[in-house]
Length: 293
Image (cartoon, rainbow, N blue to C red):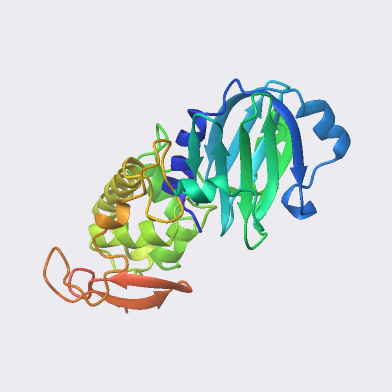
């Protein structure tokens, strides 16, 4: 599933392409991917212009000048692909030949703009969705209300992280970082990367963390998220930026998917285990698990 940096990469790319484009028509082939009343689409989408693209957690928000928004959740396999005669942006289809073949069997929604450009919402597993609602009501969506703060937001510092983590004091730190109600947008890759950077074992209980460890964890978490955004995300297959450059964060990963390789800090062999139901990469020397009595 895409994490904060991957979704932010898509947002940045679409922000350079969609604003001021007027929507001419919308079609879809799967009701759950586009669960919107025809009347609302006709009145608040058709003829409207895109004015902004925002992100909250792992969701994208396409704001329209009709005071309505299309909220897009990519879930596990969702992709947004833009195509015009002059420009192409493919989150999931970096190859021009593939973009040219859209729509394909995984295309769920097609937004046609007045200038003949198109936005495709592809989703092979059909878990994602594009939902229309008044812009003022976006924050009232159930999943939005439950989201924790954005880790890169102004004012979110290590003490704020500490407060959020202590909502689950008896849980292991990896499970808490992955909890979207604690902090929004962080998934498996960046949890492993930040815990390695902070020298914290993923099974460490939150209550056992010292303030300096949480401070270091905050520094590492914000570092890896910013680096991943700069590099266009963590996959070279599914997410590219507006210039078509592939996401390259994995070239800079210190521990994730590096099992069997040497830890770049101490040389110990990196291992893969399972924590919080997820495959977990760590250095057994740098991230020693100290059991409490």
